[in-house]
Image (cartoon, rainbow, N blue to C red; front, top):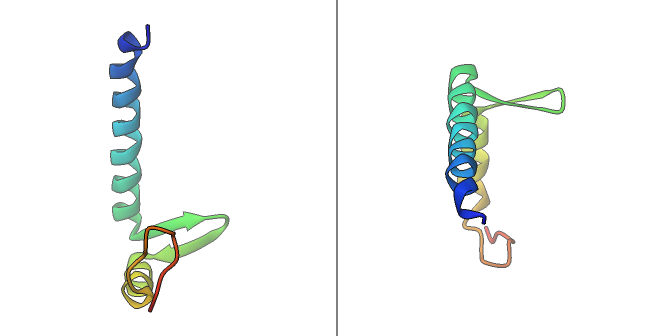
Length: 60
């Protein structure tokens, strides 16, 4: 009985993903809890943190 709802759920998730991507790129960053994080700063932090392992921790 879940099959008829799957396309609706998948379309909703795809819409949310693309909308958040569009807004982030348009604004040049992410607004989270009254703070703004610019994309270059987020990319630098990701680059400097090193790979993330399957346990969720990163090793520089």
